[in-house]
Amino acid sequence: MSSFLHHVELAAPLFTLVLAGYLLAASGRWPKAVSDALAKFVFAVAVPALLFSLMSDFSKLPPVDARLLIAFFGGCLIVFVLGRMVGLWLFRLNGVEQSVFALGGIFANNVLLGVPIAKASLGEAAMPSVALVLVFNSLTLWTLVTVSVEWARHGELSLRGFGNTLRSVLTNPIVASVLAGAAFGLTGLPLPALLGTPLSLLGSSAVPLSLIVLGMGLAEYGIRAGWREAAAITAIKLAVQPLVVWALAAALGLPPIETQAVVLLSALAVGVNVYLMAREFDALQGPVATSMVLSTALSALTVPLTLALISR
Image (cartoon, rainbow, N blue to C red; front, side, top):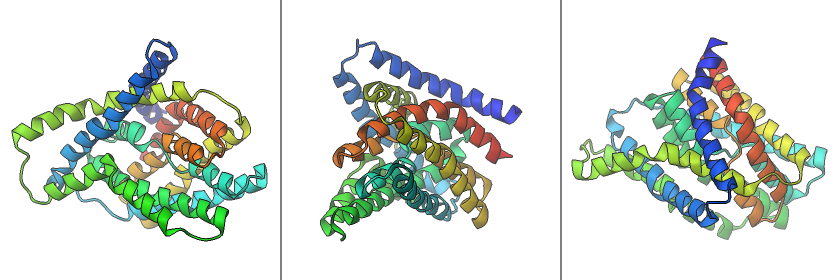
């Protein structure tokens, strides 16, 4: 209980910022253009600056057990297949809807919510593990759902779909900043103050702004139809995925810090990218939007609980 309360104490201020962003947007006094511009700044400037600064000291960071990728993405694959089965058996969804439904169970808010919570709850030692997952996260999961949708629609795989996915991932500012920072860090050279100080100042804004932007986004999506599907997506995302990832991490014998990092990332709320995919394929937009709001609200308790359990 004391461990749970400790993690609640660490996470509560972060979710308070999410609530603040939600209330600001819901008040109607902040035009949507403001939240869109702020979100673009966070994704394209603040978070990349934070990750580049971190990875620029790559040679000084503790080594990361790369098997964490097997635990995290192996868990994603298992839960994705399970999600498709649930979508078919319980809700009679078609192939495209099953793919979007299953994606909701594995694609989390790793940037807007994961980076701040990992930094606050697990400390700097966990950030290399988080960064490693972030590098492969978009490419791996977008590819997985692209294959699933292409197969459901055409019964075959599309090279054009793969090419578009790869191009969008490599031009993603988050991925690019991690790769560029790691490449610079391998040189062993310190960042000059002329570059390091501005990056540090920008990076320090990433955590609070990310959480406020997340809250603003939730106010935009709102609560819509599809409660049954949304509840199922939320249960898979907050309970099933972290359990599967933890089991794989334990089976692989991952060190504690890597285990805590991958389980934390798997226990986070449904990510905004799932809603974008739902809109792209015109499938389950209402249930996905509802699951984002529901899972974010519940994760204020489930994430500290998960951290408390694995820290034992």
